[in-house]
Image (cartoon, rainbow, N blue to C red):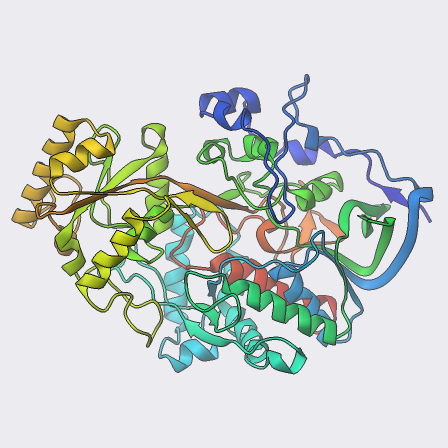
Amino acid sequence: MENEVATSMDRRSFLKGAFATGAVATAAATGMGALASCTPTAKEDGGSQSTSSANANGGYSFETAPEPIAEGDIKETVEADIVIIGAGFSGLCCALAAAEEGSNVVMIERMDHVVGRGGSIYAMNSKLTKEKGYECSVEEVAQRYKRMMGYHSYRVDGTKWMMHFNRSGEAMDWLIDRMTTASTVGGNDLTPVMEHWYEDPENINGEFPGTHEFLNGPNGKGPDDNPQQDVCDNMAAYCTKEGVDIRYKTEAKQLIKEGEKVTGVVAKTSDGYVRFNGKKAVVLAAGDFGQDKEMLEKFIPWAAHQTEFGGIWDGTGHKMAYWAGAAIDKNETPTPMIFCFQWRSITRQVRAFQGLMVNSDGRRYTNEDNVISHGALALTQEKNHYAYAIWDNDYAEEPQWQNHLYVDGPKVFETPDDVRAYWQTTVDGPGTINMNGSGDIEVKMIKADTIEKLVEELGLPKEEALETIKRYNGFCEKGVDEEFGKRKDLLLPVKNGPFYGIKCTPWFLTTTGGVRCNDKMQVMNSDNEVIEGLYCLGSMVGDMYCNCYSTHFPGHNLGGTCLTFGYLTGRHLAGSE
């Protein structure tokens, strides 16, 4: 039997999806120079940012596979039905679903613990959504599908979207049953809740109901916390109970191929290299590639320079897949998650700010009525990729933007004074906030007694900015936005002090996609042929999003590529699907 670790990339399959222009030239044209010269950073969770650049031949270092690890250096061999690389949410869902159906599962993780971030998990027609009165009919599913296919220019895999629509409720019910009784396996019983959403009366830019969170664990008392860590901790406890062999501090290095089939992976531990053989499958659930600047330059140069943060992981799983012959997404453009979290310091909600936005020239540039993903993308089109939110004291009185955090839960703010007190904490604060364990972002809110003073302190061109505010106030008085057509209910003037302003920047949270796969999560090459034995999950799943990750379904990635696809893939590999 031939034991072959892939030693070179199928350049035709990999480069078929690459950008036609040279990556270095493209990067320079889109402002990548700043990111390219950034000091390399190491993430607390073990992700690292690549520091090398394109080689003399115009390619990148990750396009060339490393030399194979010598057989003599492998100290141990572990046999399993299924080997899962990565103990994040998607890998945990797959491992538990497979183990519950009797499969022998080994999961390897580079960290010394499981890692969860965020908390929003989108699912349709779960028992919780039905209980709250938000069951979705077939007709409504079809409408949502068509709307989202349009947002993604139909350059996504509609079959995967429909699989999420049709099976996410089942997967969520499976998760709820376990999270609410996790104390039976040594975890923490969690409370499932439905997040509230932004309803657009024009039915254009609103969000859809169906986002779940699990609260009341040690890490997730509320929306300012990181409830997903509690979910993952519980999942790890369930996996242990079901016999999943979780190997921490074990870093996957190279996939093993026998002929054209992937049969295992070689990983590095403190004691040396270990070979893990997967009789049925090797599942890549290794996260994003946002900490590898070369991959950002190669695949999404237009977004790579938005912030220095750039993502969570370094693309280890993607690279191993490419070295084994995998192609990138059919649409050739893996997709970033880009949000603006300074807006959260205004409304305490993860949503777009719908008051007055002006760019660094002091000019209004958009209809502010949007969701956070699309509103943040609008920032990327402005000079230096930022703009300013401006509002007045009366904004605290306006119910149009106020909402509930959770269905049947209390309002975000009970009184206007609560709103103003929240603003004041930001004005007086340290100048940064931490978002759900994903990093710190600069937040410097300015408060001034006069609009002239506010404009000065924000550093805006005074004459132009004051004229913009005057013109905008005129539209508010008329009840007609003659510039961008924002709906009347959101035309809130800026005229009664004190006045507030904040610099708003796009926040590059992570990447999604990058590995081509079918609706069984089987990895494919550029000819759309399945690479036998190799699967992918989570942020690696290709062709789920195009252009940008949309927040019309808040938590769609966690609910789709992680929960639903992880659950179904585990059952499929165990022979139950």
